[in-house]
Image (cartoon, rainbow, N blue to C red; front, top):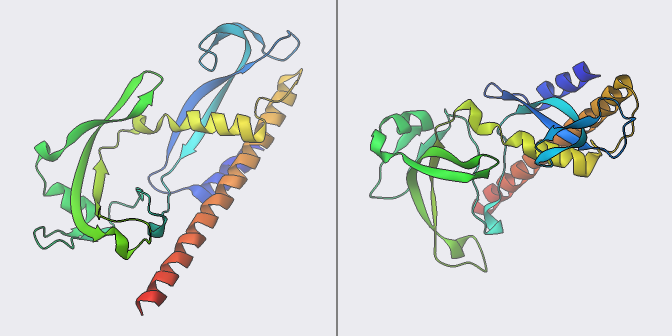
Length: 227
């Protein structure tokens, strides 16, 4: 079953930049009959308590989508060879993202936090290359002012994606019942965990396909309006 989960994830969500993140999560228990249960530290509770501990591997890849008419700021993940060109008359950039980034000096990078994690601020080096200033009222009936469009780059150490496994644990527990079991054997525990992982992987693939279809539909609509 774990092989089926892995193959499904790789087929539908895999890409060349994906990484594997290994981490553990705890399952709080009241009794002593469940397999592997005992008093031990779990980060889920932040203390030593009665629980099971499970070790997991999560497949992390960057996929995203956005629709401009929503009037919300967004970041769309693209490959390093994605082509960019500036629309501002005072800035002249054109080429692949990685080539544009190489032309900028080291002092153009700024260290900022990507949010607070379990061990403090998650600091990364960021680079912003402005590409265009758009009038909001041309794309929205409710917004005014200038929307800035640009290339945002982040130096990407592998450890930077570790926090995503915490999101995976939270979703798997809240939406798929990862911690809703009363198994008395490791065989039963692994069976439950593997089935939940497969359900999670399948729904993630479905959502990814739906996002791509929505983006393509929006792009076709935009092209039709322009014509």
